[in-house]
Length: 314
Ligand code: ADP
Ligand code: MG
Image (cartoon, rainbow, N blue to C red; front, top):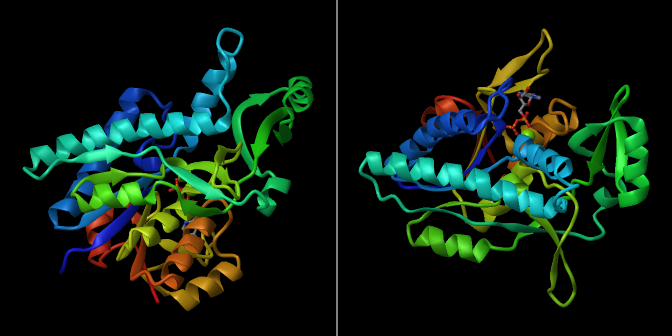
């Protein structure tokens, strides 16, 4: 098979497994395994660009900032997002460099701190849905609402969290920089955590906003921008299912674009988990992308060969 450009979106479990605390040792061990899977794709001759989630990591960073805020100023959410790109990007780029070197492959890897433009008038800003950061009791939540203008929601009886908007990604700001590096042979890690959300004024000035972006939807923008042949979303299930979690559950090897649209409409893919993945795939194929995969990272090479995971084609 000819060399392909593959944009790989890594889910949370590529970095942290369910039930783990999130220590650096745990994250490094998971990332080492992930780096092995990605290196196999490089070894097959493919050009790879990596993006990744940041949910647990940015959550922990927010807790650290809040806990330390009587000693040092807490940073806003966009800055915390940048911090998470740095820490996760560092761990992935180190593990990948080590893995590529060990296989005798060219080992140029770099993470790019990436901003993603969202629309200031995105309806999500009027309807914050994404819980972030620590849990608070009601009295503290009320204080934060008035003092900081945060929107707080009771997520479990007696436990309140800040909720932030999750606007639709429009454009990867550093796309040209990512392309330049990638064309020069560097394996680039970009748009981590869905990118740092920024708005763009009419005069072109960018400004960070307090929001989070879905990493699969941002990954789709990256994939199209890179002219990717394949958009591969690696997550913690082996395949996409219909009627997931019910007795009628049926896993799919293959789906057409039309089927993906129909199943999404019919409610097979919930928001916040499989929904944005399938929507991202639909957008990728609509924009002219070749094929998309939703598969387990453990079966990355098999999925690329169509022997594992769910392949989605036009
Ligand atoms: P990631 O960190 O990879 O983005 P998510 O938790 O956001 O992971 O999404 C993957 C999860 O989606 C799976 O663990 C699975 O429980 C859930 N899921 C929901 N609907 C489906 C479906 N129809 N088919 C497969 N998995 C589904
Ligand atoms: Mg997700």
